[in-house]
Image 1 (cartoon, helix red, strand yellow):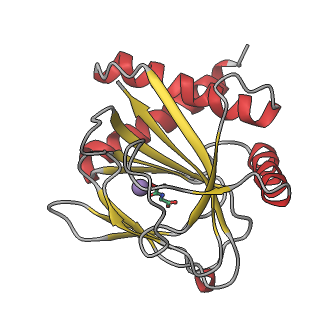
Image 2 (cartoon, rainbow, N blue to C red):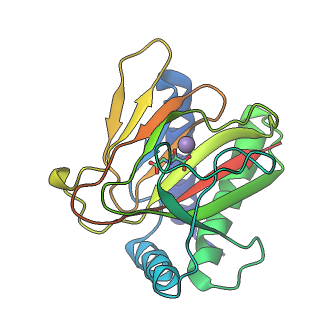
Length: 207
Ligand code: OGA
Ligand code: MN
């Protein structure tokens, strides 16, 4: 069981993400998970890279599956819902708690979560896009959880968000940082990283 302080802290994080979404069209929470969990997940994706288990990501879902490096250059691997890896379990458990909180406080009726590791090799990017597919409206909210160690400005890899009625927002992909926005409304873009691979877990709440 989590102590009172831990669950209070967790609630504050969830509340911060939700308030950000309501006020600014996106939420951002640093240190969403403890550094040892971020390190474990980072280690996992590095292992997947070495074993050749990261695959070029497609565009759109099932029926449109052309790969196009001009639009999107990340390599991915989907997380298993029933993972037994302790770091993935820690991540998925916290996400499940967030879903419970969202559904309770915002009546969102989220009933599914999907997520994948993503690695953007040096100089690869993802052009401006929305996360909701034209032929599948299931994705309601998007999140990105960054795994990069000591990411610096010179490393590039900025996430730009383009809210409808507000100025562009640039976010650095610092390890431990969580970003949260609506899949059908927030256009966004991943800029090239200049110096090294840019690693994360991207996920979607569905209903
Ligand atoms: C995506 C995406 C953003 C990021 O995977 O759809 O937009 O910052 N990722 O990695
Ligand atoms: Mn996206």
